[in-house]
Every structure is written in C-alpha cells, then in structure tokens.
Image 1 (cartoon, rainbow, N blue to C red):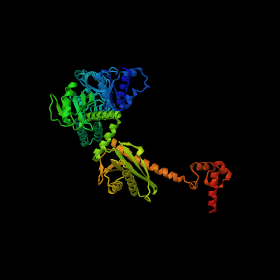
Image 2 (cartoon, one colour):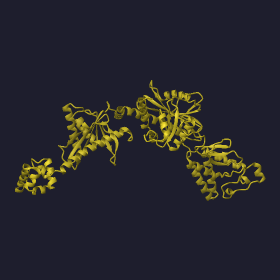
Image 3 (spheres, rainbow, N blue to C red):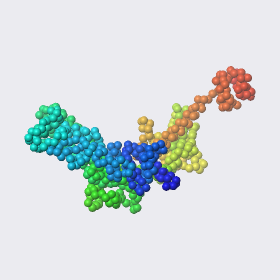
Length: 613
C-alpha cells in the first residue's frame, strides 16, 4: 500500500469513526478480504472504537490489529448487557483471528436442571447436555439469582450432591441433612415429599425458567388466597412476597429470550427524499442474535416499502442460508414465500426485536447522512432549507433569512439589530445596527415598525436583495407589526414567521401564517436548533449594541464638551490628574507639561469662562 492509498484508507476509517453513535453496541473490523478479524463490545461505540486509532496506543498487538483494518461495521443495542451478548454471539459465529475465542456456555452463567431421579437446580458455567437441561445464558446476574431464590423458596429442590435412587429411598438408606431441618428442603431422600409432587415442582420450575410465569403466578395467587381464607396470614404474606418477586422478575432481553427459537426480522427505513431505503436484517437462533446487517436499496421505479421489502427478503435469506419458519415484519405483507410465514408482532419479545431492528436501520441511515454531509457540508444546509420550506409550504427555499430584535432599558438608548442568515449560516457582513430615532419611551412595536421600514425602504431604493423569509423574535404581536409594514406600507410579499418562548424564556414553537398557527417541529431536531440559534444570535447582537451605547454614555464627562480636546488628550489628562476637578485646579505649567501649551490654554480658558458664569 503506497502513501496515497494509506491516506485514503485512514480518511475513510476516520470518517466512519467520527460518525459512529455514542450508544452501546458491538463493532466489527474487516481485513482486505472483508473477513471479520475482530469483534468488540462498547458502552459507547464512538468513544471505544476511536481509542484504537489514537497515536498514543503503545500495545504492539493493538497496532498490528489496526494495521490490518480495512473496514468497520457495528450494531446498536439498547443496553450494555445486550452489547456483551451480541459480542459473544458474533465471536462464536465468526471466530475472528484477533479475538480470544470463548467456548460455548462459559461466558455467561446458565441454570441447570439435572437428569437425576430427584433433580437439582443450580447455577453453572459448564454446559454438558447429557447431564441435564440448561436455561440461559443470563445477562442479568442479579435476575438469575432472583429466580433461583424464587424457586428455592417456592419449591425447595434439594441442593446436596448425594446420588439418590428409588431403591435407596425405599430401603431407608439416607438421612436428612441440615437443609431439611432449617426448612430449605422437602427431603425427598426420606420420602417427606412424594416423587410425583417433587416432579410437579420441577415442572413448575421449568415453566419459570422458560419465561412462562403466568401459570406459576396464577398458582401462587391461588395459594395466597387459600391461606388467607384459612386465616394463615403469615403464610399468605410470605407467598405474596414471592408472588411480587415473580411479577417483578425481568431476566429477558432483546438479545436473549427463552421463548424465541429461530426468527428472521426485517424492517425498512426510508430516507428523507424517499429515493433510498435501508433494510435491516436480524437473525435469531436459539434465543440469541447471530446476524445483524443493514443494506441500502435504491428505488428505481418508486417502489413501495412492501414491494422493496418482499424483493429483499428472499435475497437476504438466501445469502445467509436462513431456514427460519417465521419472519417478523413491521407491516402486513400480501405475499407468500416458501417454508415461512410473515408475522407482525404487537407486543412482547418479538416486538422488542422488531423495534431493535428498526433502531439499527435508523442509526445506519443517520450515519450515512452524517458521512455524506461531512464530505459535502452544503448538502446539510440544503436539506435544512428544504425541510423549512416544506414545513412552511414556501414557494422557494429560504436561502436568505433575516431576523430583528429590539433592546432598551425603559426606553433609554433604544436600539435594534438585524441579522442575516444565508444558506442556514450567519452572514455577519450583512448584519445591521439601528438607533431608534422616532420612538420615545419603551414601545417595542413602534420601534420594530421603524426598523423594518428603514431596512426594506433602503433595500428597495438601492436595489438590494430582499429576504426569502423574515423571522421575528417574538410571537403574534411582533409578526403583526412586521406584516403591517412589509405588506401594508411597502406592498412586499415576504413570508413572515415568529419564534415564541415559553414561561422559562426558552424557544418552544415556530409560528407562521395569518392568523398565525403553530408549526410542528421536533424541538430536538437540527432544524429547530438552527432556528433557536438564529433567535439567540439576533438577541445577542441587539443587546451587545445596546450595552456598547450605554457604556459610551456612562463614560461621558465634562471634557467631552470642550472643543479641541479629543479622546487621546482626555486620556492623558485623566491619567495625570485623575479627575475633572483635579484638571480644573492644575497649574498652567503642569497642563503644558502634559498636553502642550496650546491645549493647556484651551483647558484654562474653558474653566475660566465656566467660573465667570
């Protein structure tokens, strides 16, 4: 790889990393043959992946890994635990060269029910299916202990490792241990509980471990009521605690679910221009995600989402050799495919998986948009102008936007400012300041009229460019006075919008039309942030001008009234004599030494005449 190719690769990888989301997930590195060479997990994808490319990385193996990277992909999940599980699943599937390969079942603990005559139930990290049934793995360790504790309290399975046989129980070979005496075990070894009742308890335990808690919950509820009817309130209270623990038990996640064996999940996300679509595919096997990819499709004949999805599904399933019998989709599809059925989930684990797929599709779309806008910043500006045009239903994109604001204190030093945004960026050379000339007292509406009238009268006289949109820093009242001047007096057809603030003085809505209507814009959107920026900028510009004007008045002194004494002379006098009184009492020679004989004479003559008056 030559220097130019290396620079191009670094720029490509850097662009991917810069646009990664700050969310939990799994990331994958690819080599020159597009084989996965490393799978990692992160609480913050952007922060974690960027750390590999820091110059201060000094581990040799990390440097070797980074030198092999030719591409990066990632999958977003909702929680850190899910990121761990997804990483584990991908490592097991692809066995990347630079990962420590984790053997099946030894990463996260599972719960085992043994195949013994009287089965035991316990936590384990070793999986050997000939010894029993396994449930998990559990990403939430606390939840796993909760369910084990629940089973222990309700069903009290034995915990000893003694080999118990049917013949041994009949012959009385066994003695109860301490667990029986402290009421933690029903002692099947001495036949204190029948084989049939013990197996029923194990059956109910399996129901809990498989996630079928409703039947067990109903059973506990009935037991609680029965004890209450028998006035066994302490027992009923204890069962109630167990019932509530079961109700609160949440051990399943989007990545692992006991009830899901094998599923394909597909969602589709459109781009803003509806030209492209992003289809996310997730494959679940034995309750674990082992595939998660997003594909970009370009519409050729304005195909609908359903048409595009049904075209993509067989292609993607064939690529990954999927044999899942059920395919989760976001909407009804009026098509049939061989050996599989479409299903639109409304709730539960399957709905969570569908939401996760859609989130990955949206994240991929967002990342692609950010990458494109970094390469071409004007694309973002055009997108925002187009969005504002659509929101306000303007006849053309608002390239030039102007915004006004007044500033005064009780009508004194009244000023106004006009800022100009071109292409959604401030054009500071076009900003203008205005001293209010015709208004006396604190009258914001009259001041706004004066400024708007002066602004656009001059533009018309000079043949300047009128704005595509005027935004007022205020609500309906400000919009009304601007409209009265622009349309009523000057006969101009310029769209006028208003930015209103809530009780906490925060921008919360955009107004447009007549009578003004609230325009629905997400306050977290980029467009709303730009509009808020415009409002903050005009306020800053006007109030800064007002402060400067006040400062000049505050610094005004008697020396400013003496003809022939300029700012520099004034500065020398104040520095030497400290005050006007000190200057007045100074001798002619002292004044001459400071500012020269001619200006000393002017100062002496001024104060002589003043005393004479």
